[in-house]
Length: 334
Image (cartoon, rainbow, N blue to C red):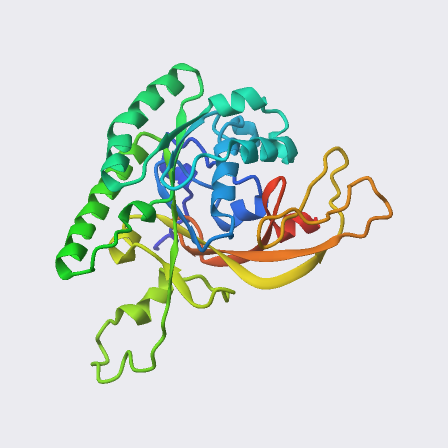
């Protein structure tokens, strides 16, 4: 008699399992199979104003929480390629998010080391040299490095030179080299979070014309690994960096603007004011939580899609951006 194989979890497969890093939102965590896992590469991809950096900042804070609260008691190395780290936004999220109230503002910033790069050679140098210096310092502080963020990776590959077969081959080599370094770092029990941008998709009904039925056409297959399920207000988009990069990451999370808005009643937190943001990340006239006469406001809805993951099935859910960070609509309504 053949026994039915039992389903194993990540906890069962590894005795060294350290736990996931919570996103700070239980519905996001559920969609991701638990959160962000050290030892893997996770990508946040989306157009501007979707909250990619906001969520990255949020994770650089939640990783500092003790394990009992969903963190790893660890620190972050945050590599920037376009603009400097938003320290004031970090402190705002820390001050308003219910989970993060136990963190000290001064200690919070001490546990986030930042490195600025603006091209591919500098990024490689940061990953080969600077991060090890930061790791040694953080490990000695008692809050070991548990999260590495690159914001954003595609910027260092953007060039003004004409795209040719030779340049594409060279770029593929560079992407592979970068991925190899990131996998090595991930093997040191570090969660890798990489921010990526999107490219517009130009659909054509002639794509598959006169092609054999068994031919795999990239534009037909890309929707399974490069696009979310939701309709984007920016039109059809797909993750940048191409197939070579897609094969190197374990989880792809796509953030999109939906063009939809929803009435949001006043937040129910009693001790802190939570301010909602509109499409331009400008604070809306959100009511004070203790004002019983306030009715609420309407704010922009965005959508998070788990395109693919090692730990969960594809899924989508709506979210909003507030002074407390990125919050799922379900979490706000409970």
